[in-house]
Image (cartoon, rainbow, N blue to C red; front, top):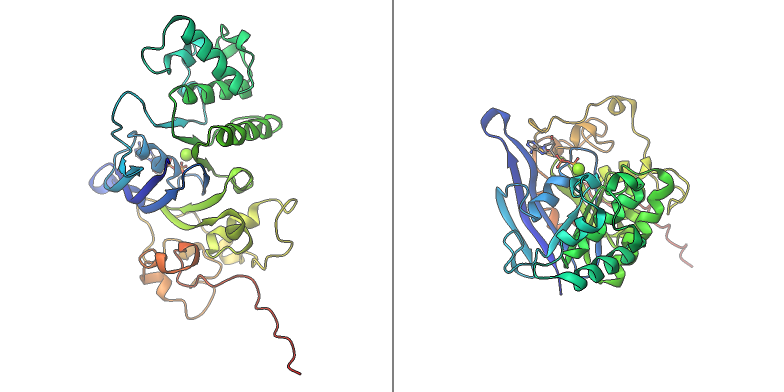
Length: 330
Ligand code: ADP
Ligand code: MG
């Protein structure tokens, strides 16, 4: 069992006029041994939520629990939650051989031949030739460096791995291989995983569940196929519409085209989020487009999100699929 729970987590940076609530009351469960994909545009608070789990971002409110215990203050020598970042240099010292970088992350007390064997085993686990352990990160390709970063995270014997945009800096040609590797390792080691990307096409490829983040809030969450085929939040539908048609699950999912009046709307300023539903100035089903939706300007839909399907933070989280026509009565 390795379940990670974010319980109404808020993270606030700075103070007074410069203050910014980067994560606002986010609740999310990572079931043991499963991959939860976290998607949302840049600046929506994905990295902040992830960093809070390992103590790299301040926790202003809420709790983050690993099997019921504070995940930010692990007991013992192990750090059970490990992160892999977009830039492998964030975790690899450019002057250290890749073998030494991996060895450094092994539990203390792993010595001599056991240490070398562990490094070789970890490099093999990420499909790297252990013979390359003496190389520097700069002597590897971007994809290989990211594999080393994964091996280093695994060296800490984590129960939960958080992968934050780990393929975003890679060539498209190697993204798929790294994704397959990560998914493979996750299954083999039965890891619990939070997989973060701004790209829904990437997230849905590896995730059992999807959570959608917008302006510091999780606005929709559910099993991947349910969220993809029956998105309840207009922002999820916006993200889905941005995924190239090829390979989409539904042919025509009824997503309305974004009206011109909204297309030019700037993303909201996180220092001054709009009142009510923070998505309303951009929403193609909101008060700027449809009559009778004034609640969106004043009432925060996050408050009763738990009562709606996919915990959608939308006052009008109705199903998108058109109602099935009733068969004619005999
Ligand atoms: P994402 O990973 O979704 O792109 P981030 O979590 O990096 O989003 O950022 C969320 C918001 O918090 C952004 O507005 C960003 O500018 C701000 N932010 C992130 N880190 C800090 C920090 N250390 N200090 C102040 N503001 C920050
Ligand atoms: Mg980020």
